[in-house]
Amino acid sequence: MLKIYNTLAREKQPFEPISPKKAGIYVCGMTVYDYCHLGHARVMVVFDMVVKWLKASGYEVNYVRNVTDIDDKIIRRALENNESISELTGRFIRAMHEDAERLGVSPPDHEPRATGHVSGMIAMIETLVKKQLAYPAANGDVYYSVRDFGNYGKLSGKSLEDLRAGERVEVDPMKRDPLDFVLWKAAKEGEPSWDSPWGKGRPGWHIECSAMSEELLGEHFDIHGGGQDLQFPHHENEIAQSEGAHGHKFVNYWMHNGFVRVDNEKMSKSLGNFFTVREVLEKFDAEVIRFFILRAHYRSPLNYSDQHLMDAKSALTRLYTALDGLDSPSSTIDWEQPQAKRFREAMDDDFNTSDAIAVLFDLAAEVNRTHSADTAGLLKALGGILGFLQRDPRQFLQGESEDEMQILAKIEARAEAKKAKNYSEADRIRKELLASGIVLEDTPQGTTWRRT
Image 1 (spheres, rainbow, N blue to C red):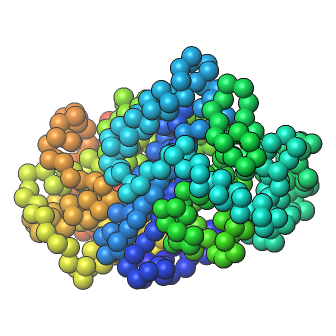
Image 2: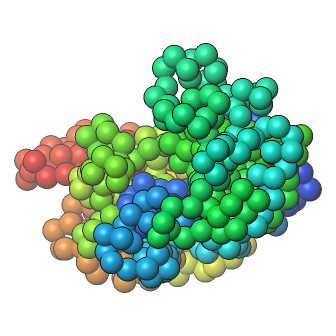
Image 3: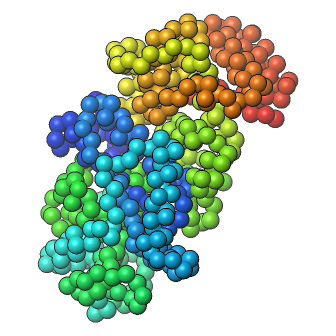
């Protein structure tokens, strides 16, 4: 049975969907004022993998990933660029789609834009005001009254006392409490606005996802995902809004992928230490980037460097090399086959792609040893579930130099020697490569190499 680490419960739990063999999933998407960076790519690739595994497991999936196309940063960037907001957001939505396609990310079933769902946001805010969980301020803003929602903090584990003592909160004389957050912002001159019971204005960020997920998945659905940075306050506030409005549970399973880090700092636009997907694609094949993202468990930190991308390229090359020159018939997967069973067990254990990829390397070693077309077919089919190994091997390998191919052949020979318990031969190969400036590093996903 599939188990998912539920951030809300802080443990892995069996996945029991609301409707048998159906899964509704909502993922917070991009705020479109710039090109996607590698942190955004991780969100897209991770939840694409989740959806693909759910489908491979027989679930009918309804996948929603939103776009925030109205926001303070968007308004500011449009002014800086001297272009309209629709021109800015349209340009970066197209760029996001191009990046996603290159990374092998399938389009979601629904991609709602915030500006298309303002009426639903207004309706939810009206409900919260009627329930005295929200209040209009004298300046035309509407705020959520955090202290009037009894379970605030249950997702992040933060108490109201801790938040008051340790969190930096916006000083706003219009708020009854510094922890209250904005649901509706009164219009400012020159900014886009919509009519509402509180005057012209626009929605706050948090209310967007509560309203759009309700419209497309209902008041109660299975899985809500996003980056770890959204756990608080965004997802905490979504719970307060949706459960406050409807009086019942909002989401059964909360999933959060780990940060992408550069020099032990989170990659983000605000810190200025980000690499756009386009920049990385100039140096590395898109499938290599996808492999780099998925070879780590989705909840683990992902450390970015050119060397780690080179390691991913080397590892993926080993898999394609095993398929090169062999017929690999595409066939239905026999899930009782031992390696397929191991793959399923890994993926059912909270989408453990790291262990699943280790199975691919074991299959590649078997292909190299037996030249079995059936084993090659299984390798390709299982790799396809993760979005790998679907190209002609020659197409992928043509970029590899003769020198690199020889290094990989020696690495494969060393792996075979170790499997045969011929450790002296394995050590000889390692020393031979080291003498030529090649350092080998053994990892759970296989052996990687780098030049000294």
